[in-house]
Amino acid sequence: MRVQLPDDWKEVLADEIKKPNFQQLKEFVDEERSAHTVYPPEGDVLNAFKLTPYHQVKVLLLGQDPYHEEGQAHGLCFSVKPGTRPPPSLVNIFKELHNDLGCTVPNNGYLVPWAEQGVMLLNAVLTVRAHKPTSHKNQGWETFTDAVIRALNDRAKPVVFLLWGAYAQKKLKLIDTSRHRIVTGAHPSPLSAKKFFGSKPFSAVNKALEELGETPIDWQLPDR
Image (tube, rainbow, N blue to C red; front, top):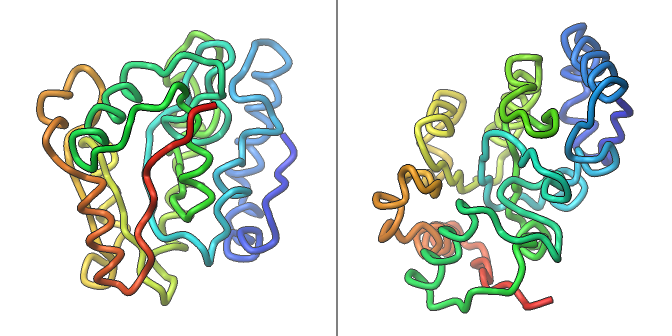
């Protein structure tokens, strides 16, 4: 696995990517790719870093595991490529976005416009074997993405952390909650959607950004 992080991220994660466990992770992903189909494609694995530079991160939205069916995952949590039907969690995100801010539901699930505005769409695990959810769990990705959260926590400029569900909320221990803003809520998956609906996370994020003196996010996605 080639690790082509942008220079700004490479600098803050330099120690992490030199560690033996990261080298082992790269070998594991290479072995998986040689024997199985792995998502997302290699060139897309680090898209969250490429689209949202370190110093431009305003919001970190943490997902868990990439989508595991063909044509879905492209390196941003919850996002799918244009032309791919939005999965159930994303459908629920769009419903809540409409209820919260009145945004119209787009005809696609491509969240790149959010990433380009400073919403880092990071999964805790960045690869998965096709049709096998969580198959790359506990192979080293979590250590790496915890280092990403720590790097953002260490930054002088505060970040709004958007943490949906128990898994994401476990990462609170890595965050100085006195300096950064935290927005928590239920996960948008169909299993917890009843609690997710009505949580108004998008307006809460924008309120936090405004209190920090930052421009709010335009959550409205264009049709494609």
